[in-house]
Image 1 (cartoon, rainbow, N blue to C red):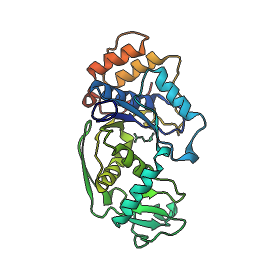
Image 2: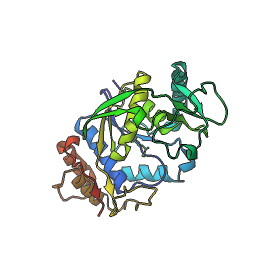
Image 3: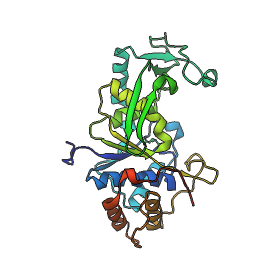
Image 4: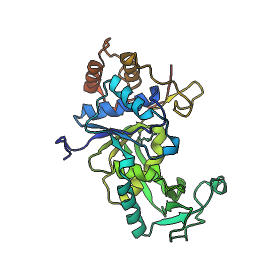
Length: 290
Ligand code: GLU
């Protein structure tokens, strides 16, 4: 049981690299409705470890956009930067298991490799100026995705041994996210399909560390006319916060709920949608942003 007296929760985990755009709103609303439709709490976690990529003011802008759309989160805003002790303990445990090695391969040396070629695998003792990788050996991960159905990955064919602590000392997204989503409080991870390829690595780490694996659902993306995912990196237009109900109505249609009542009341729209929402009912093809 969590502190809301319910078992489990959903979560939305933006990185503070820019304001929300229509694509990130789609992921936020899907995960919000998935939680609300099951009477589960909905958490917001800021994935704020990669400080060099942060944009000043992004954190505030993201939370303000959620508030304006009445996407109310439960409990305090969580931040990965507050969990560094947990990540260090996980690294210690993986090290005790003999799963880690210290790698100085540059991006350039690995450029043409489909999977990590194993070059530094024998460097099991700490050495400076190294990334830390975890060995995947012959691990296979299976997930029954709530949207895409059964998935199966052989990790050695998915890039192989992967980085859990970067050369600059920053904990890698895969490890931090595995630890945070492996917390028993989190039972539903609904996010964009662009992150599907990260799931086998996160589940692999959860399994190695004996953590609880949440239910995953990877939803359609919003793409531009060239088929590229809308993203902060490609400078997608930030949401117009003067029109939250219109933004929500468009988003609900993308989630398969196209007959929303005409209203400016975001709470009413979200309540209407939560009564009808089914993550498995979201159309599975990518959607072109209008
Ligand atoms: N923080 C990452 C992002 O914004 C990952 C989110 C997730 O795992 O849902 O792309």
